Image 1: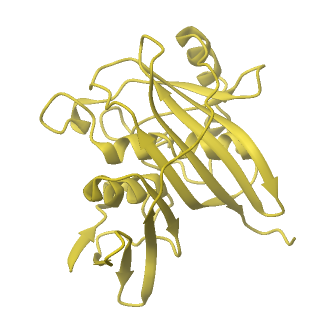
Image 2 (image 1 turned 180 degrees about the vertical axis):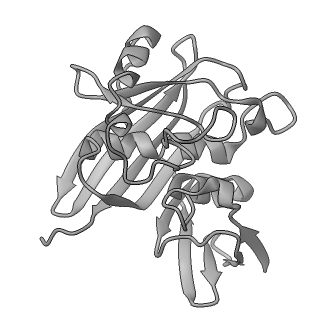
Image 3 (image 1 turned 120 degrees about the horizontal axis):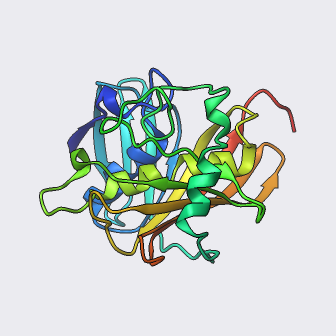
Length: 233
């Protein structure tokens, strides 16, 4: 048994970890594609026990119960072609989080985060029905080889899915995420991140997300389920 501690820098809501980062931190350590379900908001600055089983699944557990669980699973997801980088820049200028944001200090999409601290991915809607944003990975995301760590790819793939299914107008939490990193992008490499709606079932909303490099090559993709709060059905 080992432990995982989510540093306060990597928050989503003020007192819990960004879901994509938390999912990716364990999936990256496992070295395999994973479907990760968040059972409860991941606490910050708290040692979480990591439990493994013989099938390759794992669980994160706090003193009060299970926080997350992951199961090996290969992602199958059709990804739409990326917009041109200039289109992503235009979309980002219309990011709804600039007007109103439930968690403005979110590590991924919080407009209050400084450059080099948060990811500052601000997705806005295009006429095609997808959301898009430019992303310039900071040096602080480097693993030592000039490339961005796996967990930050998962983080970058998180919040654009929320804006794809909610438009930033409804409060939701990440319930489940599954991702595959085709190629780790380099720090300082201009990237485009997109998100699109896959469907809804009552309070559950399904999204796809993807990261492309400056040449339009697909580098990472994910599917996620978002749970809408404050609504019955």
